[in-house]
Length: 77
Image (cartoon, rainbow, N blue to C red; front, side, top):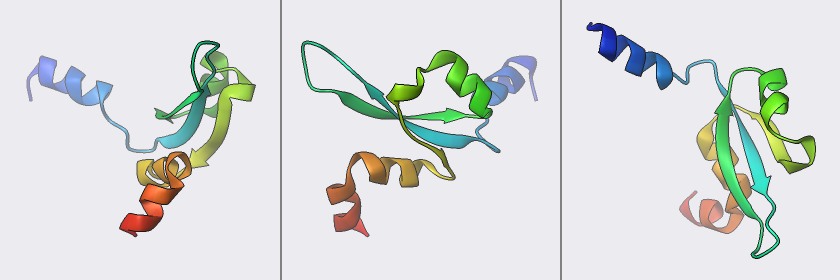
């Protein structure tokens, strides 16, 4: 594997990651929720304020997305 390909793989390697649902609060619009992958709870808390973390420790992106869009997830299940 080339060095560039190795670096790309390291940037996007989510094995061992957990997922969190984050809520971005805005004054000019409704809050927006999104999913973020993280490896360390401490690292997550270092960059995201605790009140903005809606859920964490989720084992899959799909599980996190179900929290954001419960109606859509229930319809596709």
